[in-house]
Length: 213
Ligand SMILES: Nc1ncnc2c1ncn2[C@@H]1O[C@H](COP(=O)(O)OP(=O)(O)OP(=O)(O)O)[C@@H](O)[C@H]1O
Ligand SMILES: [Mg+2]
Image 1 (tube, rainbow, N blue to C red):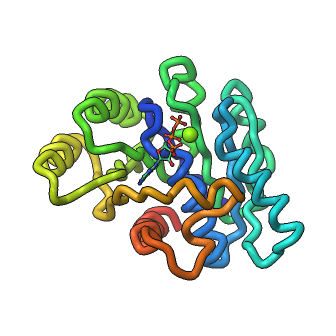
Image 2: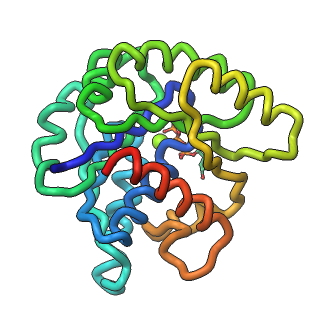
């Protein structure tokens, strides 16, 4: 049975595409057949997937992570080929209010909705109303704290605000200056044997996997 993870947040730049591509690579490295579906017109995940495809022509040892793109208006047909895969990870644009019925439809269909959020009050202000809306569509959503630093005073306060209304993933992603670097070649931190930040993504995958598979 195909499992679907929807990555969604109304806040721009919260880490949706970063989380989507790292989950895809980890799932593939763990033996699942995966498909990325990019519903964001910016095409961040799609462009990454195209670069990866090109790189694999020369270096096929990098694991295959196919990515397709579609519009949110046509989200049902965008998932047409999904049933061939073990796991589909769906990346979405931040403009949820313009695509409310499509994104809540996707949330109903998804086995898990992942909401990455940076640890600032602005992000809390944006994400909390979205969590309430999603509650009508799914019982399976988690917030992933991104660019998190447990040593800051604000971390516990922000995490506490989220915990009052939502499930918060026990694994947070730290600030990783180089997380964008491998993306230039269609890669992730997980495509290398040792890079800072790998562990956090691996632990995140262990948690997500238990929720979904
Ligand atoms: N943990 C992190 N550490 C450092 N930089 C990060 C981290 N997560 C994301 N970034 C950077 O933040 C920027 C936004 O990340 P990303 O593109 O994944 O966000 P997004 O939610 O998909 O954005 P959009 O809403 O525009 O689609 C990127 O430059 C990315 O490299
Ligand atoms: Mg994005």
